[in-house]
Image (cartoon, rainbow, N blue to C red; front, side, top):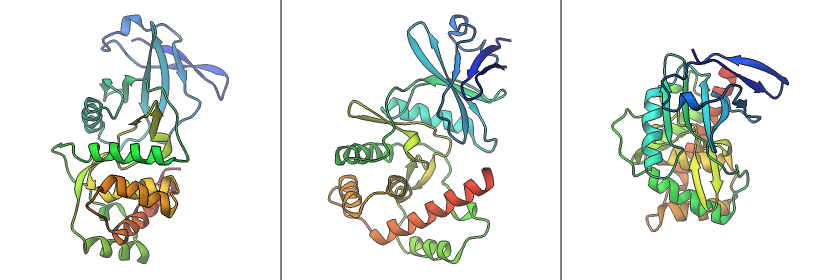
Length: 250
């Protein structure tokens, strides 16, 4: 087994990363003690960077056990082929990790109008991709829906569905900007869903002002127009789902 040491920077000491990388195409070129735990971590994965020659890679050790990682890999591959994600290179379900290209760039926590236009364009592209997978049943995710959530679902049910391939977790840490490009990471929650869910998540996560929200939605929908009532209902659902998730997982 190829087991190497990596540095946990917040502890300041090396720990053994027991992972067999022998099936990775370039495993023989990975040096010992090559892995570095990234200082900023998400909630779903433990992320390490490592170098091979002059190329940087990312190893994601899975924390969540309830995700369909094979589906995630499939969706990320499709997204990569369309310029929206890092190239996935290796998936090991038995050991619970994935290797992909490392994306350089920055997380933007406040979006400019240029950022919003880029965001809208990337979501337009994502939402046109075709993949035969199950639709996400949002209602089934709630154990005890509040009256506000029930009312939001009633509002949503009064509108036509706009079912597309969605990322479903568009918080700032999952969005990487570089040189007028935008790519998304952490695709484990991707599924078919209403496009308004992704749009609402951007509005909530980036705390868009009414003016910026209107600009973003105008860029996304172009001349089609949109429903503010439906968007507001999806904001309620998104916020409630996030609150429930953090309560259950943290």
